[in-house]
Length: 353
Image 1: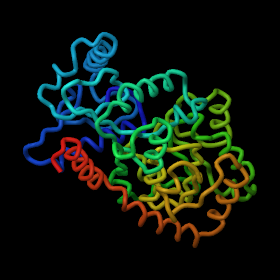
Image 2: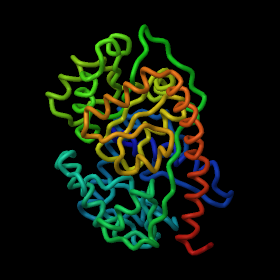
Image 3: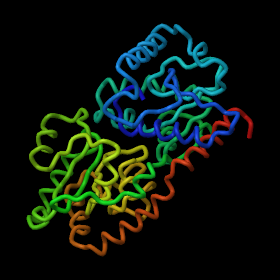
Image 4: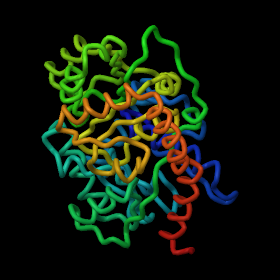
């Protein structure tokens, strides 16, 4: 909650709120370090706390990571479980250790990440994931990657699907001058936006005249050349606040997400819940998550992406069919379900099942 992030920050914010909602009366769920019980509005571009509060807590984490002082055990009191994130390098010794595995891209595709991200994730893997008493994987594909890549015993990892905000299920379309195809997500190499732009150029001129390509998301570590293309070959909306994303998504004639790898794929599930027909990649967890509610493509093939977009844009009946399938499929991904299964997981880690 203290740093700029996208999917992981959404996960922590919604997950924590719903864990507290469904926890038994004698269970207390705290946010470390000293984040309080009332979470502010979710904002991916800034910390949940004021600048002085944020700097003080980040300094505390850095002190613990680099020196071991003060020990985490002092700060968490008699807590029985500590759920670590990749900000932590020195887990407590007395509490049971758990964590969530979101994806393994820093091992499988290090070239699409910054060197700093790769180093941080690999330290997290060595110091937290390999030592944890139990782990949550956000998809079965991610679970299998962790077993294969990190050598973690299968019985230590449980697949618990993430949820999405209820506002997506209730969203009504935003009005724009032209119908549009939408991508949402960070502007980074893994999201494969150069291939999307290549695919857009392959569409018939009549379709590109009728439909607008919108790209919404904070600028990550994409090359300047990619960012320049986005600004000239599409309509770039920049970072869209979390509260505005559902209505933007609901208004899309098609939602396109040609990612090279996903651990869960929040934008795809959000699009399905909002009733936007989805075109997405046939790799990683995306077929597992989207099921029969998306048109799947080879993410590296601009021609396949263009072909599937053309099918959707030229066929209103197909768009209606895929939208209906998406709404039905998205019902499987609710935060209430995720929280209840996570609480059961924690009880299992404590040996109380």
